[in-house]
Length: 125
Image (cartoon, rainbow, N blue to C red; front, side, top):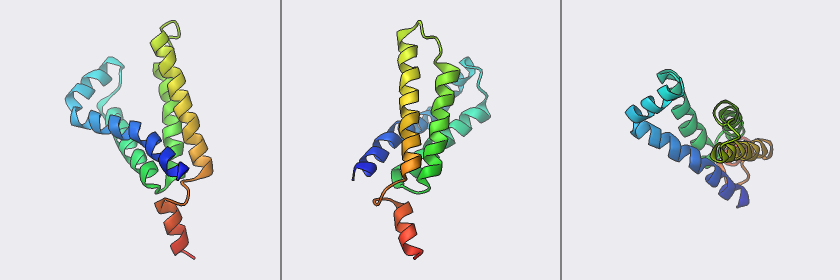
């Protein structure tokens, strides 16, 4: 049960952000442009957040989804939150690294018994 709750909590931030970006795509394009990000990279980011978020929430291919989001969080922290003289930026840097740590733990531990991964493994025997 703890792994399920942890997966859902970790997945929520990515599902929420991905859906929010997709629903306000024109605003997301403007924001991405301020950071020098292209539209294809924005679309890939939205797809990663929603796809890997669903992967973690459902427990389907959880290790892959968690690894991808863990790397995404490390990249986000090191590319966008490095102005440590700004307390808010430092907080976002630390938050992104903490989420990455949780994702890497999930990638190592797997989704647990309340997951599609576990159900599929049981059917294969």
